[in-house]
Length: 397
Ligand code: FHN
Image (cartoon, rainbow, N blue to C red):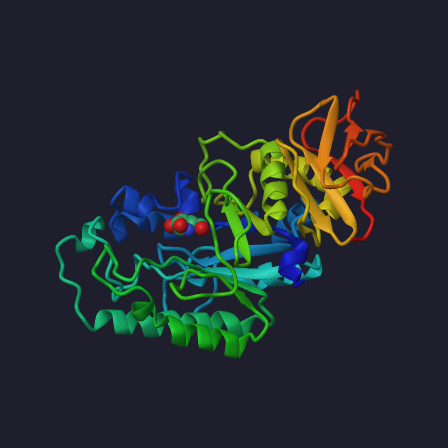
């Protein structure tokens, strides 16, 4: 069990120039903006309310135990004082490195530190962008450019992994299949993925790296969906709150806390993590709608975290519309719909020592023990809405 499989729940933070556009982090490409048309976001980037300590407290209160920040997204803008480019936060009106205070704030709250880093770079002159980019629709991609971009990519990753102490997690984003439909590239070969991964492990021996270099990493990354069952590899589903990774001012279509709790429970029941995204606005603040959903999740996690932290799939079969998570002899039954008259647990006859609701420790009585299964009376009133969790200590096999 590593910190990753113990913590189970993390915060993803998509933040950068696109946060001022407040429409979507792909706004530059979706709206076919030239560098000049995108420039006002650089010239006006001044997040005066940036408070990574507040972000860290919000994450911790929600039950999250690691935080992953976009150091550079596809637009190429760097949130740290890179020596390798002028397209960085220290050249904006804000003028200061954003990454160091983020790292320090996470550590101060006892949270693991993660970096997201885009392989794609729509700003770098040597990066062969896709045909939808207005500046380079017709330009042929000079063969030598990708080698020059690759050196830039490796150099910036080295900066990030040598300047800020121990980094626990790295989310590269994103690779393609072996041949790149965008410019006929070769994916991992273009990124120098094998060499880059070797450098990462040399610089940060204990770091966890995802699978988006296009070669195997430490965990796979289903995005905006829940796998239908356990996966052979370590895995982490990344999800947005409202369908947009970056701050999207007019999009108030937030997922409910209850749905997100069920995603978290479902994932843990299948051996996976949930990385839930926030998109801070151009002043550096997590918007109130997002903060409210996270706070509601935190209320549930406060009473139920032992059914998540350190848990994984159970050897027993969950009844329909339920999930089972387990940690040693502690079995947790999560009811996604109730009240039921009874809930039947096949294969557990004589094995459940006691049954109680996790939220208030109230007993749930076993009413019958049909051959091969137990049944529990779950007719209850006055319980909190949403996912209801029973703690069922089971007798060792
Ligand atoms: O294109 C990006 C997207 O903007 C976002 O960063 C997600 C997060 O996993 N990754 C890519 C899409 O898969």
